[in-house]
Length: 164
Ligand SMILES: Cc1cc2nc3c(=O)[nH]c(=O)nc-3n(C[C@H](O)[C@H](O)[C@H](O)COP(=O)(O)O)c2cc1C
Image 1 (cartoon, rainbow, N blue to C red):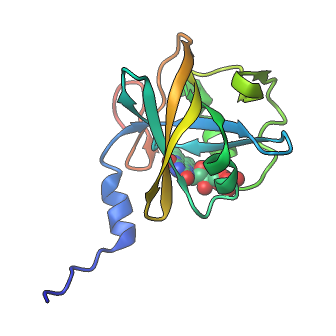
Image 2 (cartoon, rainbow, N blue to C red; image 1 turned 45 degrees about the horizontal axis):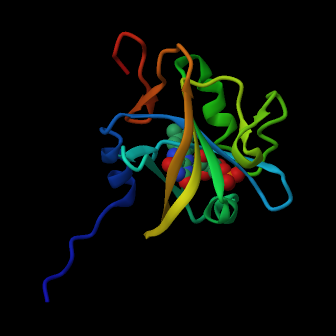
């Protein structure tokens, strides 16, 4: 049997970074009604009819169990002026919401006051995905605000002119 080529995981992560993405914050409520949220770049569209989107959650995230079990969640696509939210919601276990005046969305899911776009979803499927789970959501409502998008390329924010 031929030996499988070894993959250098750091190199793999680095080269994946050529695929520029938006950045989003996904939110939900845990079983106690506490707000949870995390920064993600794995968000993508899946289907128009029915309206489905997906993202993937790492098994080593503190909020992994909450998101895998959540019946509802909201995805906030971040705008360029929201770079500070990226680090804030990428820190494990912090009180990430204390400076935000959230409103209640679908089933009480916290909705941040600002975003480029927001999608309120119910969890339709959860699939295995290696060290992540892939969460497919059915979109129940969406809204947008007039804002330039925040784009990440090779671990850096893309500036407005289109250079990183
Ligand atoms: C730009 C960026 C994109 C990220 N994308 C994801 C992602 O798609 N899925 C994921 O599970 N973690 C992603 N992370 C890491 C989480 O935001 C980070 O692990 C966070 O601490 C998880 O919060 P928790 O441990 O409180 O659940 C990303 C981080 C950054 C900075």
